[in-house]
Image (tube, helix red, strand yellow):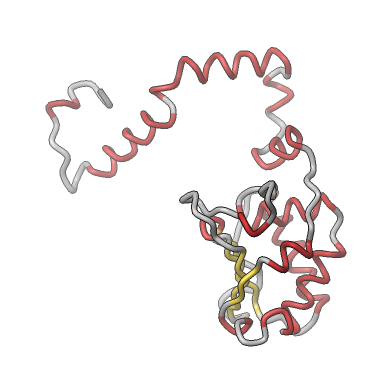
Length: 192
């Protein structure tokens, strides 16, 4: 039962959002609340909750899993291109600058950027060729172009492993905007 008396309530256009909210809460939390409570209890016996409170989910993932080693060459080899970047692919200036910046980033910056762009800092064991989307199907990392008037920052569509990069005039601007996007993401502000 999703709510008291719920079996007697018909789902209509007016209450469907509430129904979906209650169903998702049940599927993700309520039906496994006992198991989840025991897992959290065991976890907080090892690491007290007040120490965990200082971390956001991305930082906690990096803390628990460690920094991955990200092979930028494999990442590049398994990337598709769209928009202005489709015809020249990795020969387009902006795309070349992007990969140069990824090579310049340290492992933490690469992991944080991968998390920004795909929703996870982890690379599949088999490499970037097996990167999955939110539906569990393989979705290659994709770089798409957007006009500067649309956004001055890169935009990530993590469900699709797609990164939209404005057509920057130079590498310095691209690098600065990538770093700013990571900083904005880490404090809870994002372009979308």
